[in-house]
Amino acid sequence: MNKEAEMKLVSDVPKKRRKTASLDKKTARGGYLFTLPFIIGFIVIYIPVVFESFLYSLTTIERITSGDTYQLLWVGLANYQEALFQDPSYVQILTSGLLQLLFDVPAILVFSLFMAVLLNQKMVGRAAFRAIFFVPVILSTGLISTIDSGNQSLLNYMTDTSTGISTGASNQTGVTEIVNAMDIKYLFSNMKIGSGIADYVVDVINHIYDIVNRSGVQMLIFLAGLQSISPAIYESCNVEGASSWETFWKITFPMISPMILVNLIYTIIDALTSSGNSVMSYINSVYSTQSGQENLSVAMAWIYFAIVIFFVALAAALMSAFVFYQRRD
Image (cartoon, rainbow, N blue to C red; front, side, top):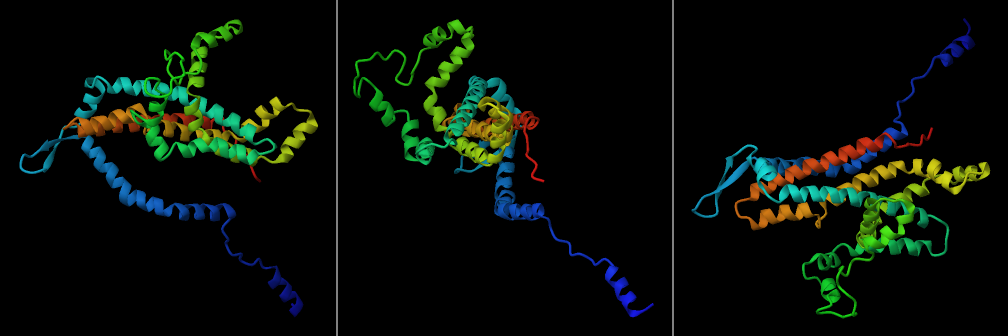
């Protein structure tokens, strides 16, 4: 065998390629590295606190007269039984809070999606309109939120006709009510729409301030999803003669379905854990005002936590079957 043939055989031998991580693996490593401080803090700080809280829910406090010391007595599930079967208000407030959740979540999602679609259109002053609709999210934090949530807030004081500016109008339905149920029922009377839907529409209109107040983050997420859709898809729809209605339901809605899932979970958690939530307020009142009932309030919090996790898991399971993920192959 001559030298040229040997060199050809050597060149034909496949060389070992260096194993290089794919882009998805590199991105995953970057994500884990980014969340590593939170993971460490969760394991070192948060989990011990959660375990101690669960331990408190299974015990009761026996105070020792000498000083402020106390000891914990094991009672098992007695605190949970008292919260569910003996407390006269907890189950009632919990039920009303969950019913309010069924009202809030669809209204917030529909409104935020509707406004995101409008604000995604090309128009003059689009950035200003987006900022205006996000302003309530900023105003709902800090001092404004404290003033608005107080029992004798400045807003309530100024709108009280007995102490503030009198407009001469009747105060029978309250200053925050915009429309009356009878008006909506009269409007829907020829449309064969039931009274339940009319009452729901009335509640949505009368709580429009609260809905707008809690829709800013969802609007931003929907806007990000809408802007990620390729304009070429809409151009092809126009070429094929699809209407705007067909384009929305067959292109836009499936493409932003992952954002709907994210907003659904976010809205449920935000509604169930907000400071103005009736269940959270009741649990805090039991802890702060009823001496010796601290462990009972912890048990109530754990029951509420389990319900929150159940609703989040149920929403994720139901929506995951309808979520469309675009392949980028």
